[in-house]
Amino acid sequence: MRVLLVEDDDRFADALMVALRRQGFDVRRVATAAAALAAPVTDLVLLDLGLPDMDGVEVCRRLRGEGETAIIAVTARGDERDRVIGLRSGADDYLVKPFGIAELMARIDAVMRRVRPPARPVVVARGLRIDLGRHEVTGADGALVALTRKEFELLTALARRPGDVVARERLLLEVWQSTWPGAQRTLDVHVANLRAKLGDPRVIATVRGVGYRLAADAPEGGA
Image (cartoon, rainbow, N blue to C red; front, side, top):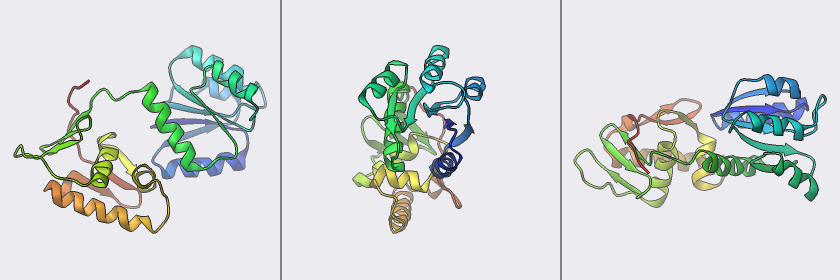
């Protein structure tokens, strides 16, 4: 997913870009309102309101007037009045600094579900049929594949982004709500179990040093 970070604080921006890229996002950063308004369209804008050349609220209004790109205000302005103004200017959510990456990821996921609800709940991968709505996986032989709750949650996290690499840290956050280094082994074990139960290890590809990818065919039409 493409993210535009609009932030004039270099230290904060650098740290946030590293964290977002670890989650698998394609991040571009600009430091001014002018650059933000001139930037190519992205899926999500993380917008600081304290910009040097224009108030971020006005930037938010202009971005909202140009299209339906998701916008999350990321700012030190924490008063209720500021929150109300930010949301009324077109922001989909409002996050006050300082914050943790887990909270930011939860806000991003919630906003993207609202602005881009899943239109294709069924994904096909090498003969397997993954029905995200019914929580069912059907093998190439037509039989249901029995998965544990965590195995299905892990498969769902991959199937929501068919063909895309999903970072290990992002999978840990979504499935286990943790980025504890010790959980990395848990992730690897669950991936191995999934591959065994799905009957084809090529269904889930390892992208060394980054994460995993579901080797999916084109999604089927759905709700």
